[in-house]
Length: 310
Image 1 (tube, rainbow, N blue to C red):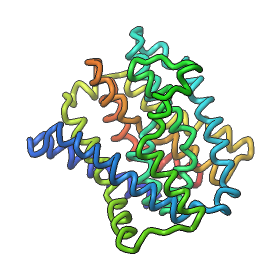
Image 2 (image 1 turned 45 degrees about the vertical axis):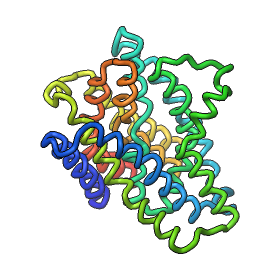
Image 3 (image 1 turned 60 degrees about the vertical axis):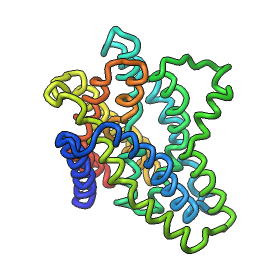
Image 4 (image 1 turned 90 degrees about the vertical axis):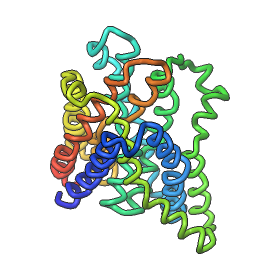
């Protein structure tokens, strides 16, 4: 528990640093955009290549494929249930979509990857990245469309636009790393060192972006959103404890239970802050849930994971 608490505290320190720098006018909102681009196209992609090329082998696939099946079942169940749970949160369809997305989708990339990497190392990160593959499909299809005011039907599910969304830098780098891992191909020594160095920037940069983004809003107003506390409680405590408890009673143990609980115990994602800006919608709802959930996750995550012996 101590190691997990220290890891989440370290991440929160970087959030506070980003927030402080922004409030002191040393950095600005446009800097967060630059850092986000670097995070997407450099640090996160390098992390994907590094972890998958080192650990994704034929033996690994044979052993770990149940993670993908479990994840697919999880996202369908949580997605359907939270779709109905989110309805009372707002009468406005778009605001309701923001609440639904926050209830379903945590920040598994910006917060989940660094935490798993810090606690379990590259092997654990590979497992977690494989686990969230079906969840990533949800993110870039239904989740993305709901936050960008696009309809999603069976017809456009396999459209070129949808395929292009899935063909993002993260997916491409994961596939590249998978090919390297399966075939045994390696990068030249100097290039491998560069990739590993870039991977080390993942956690600090991701948390700095969170802090800078949140600084744009009135903190007092963000903390006064009562619905955000309800979402946070469901996101950080109720979902992992209830679903994890059901799995435990059904005899499901090991990696499936561990990564399910970790995923469900993560704070709310940041897409509910960044995407509404594209349509001049209310960003404060998403920012409120992101701020409150990231603060409280420093306490709830160690407790919830310890409850399940993780």
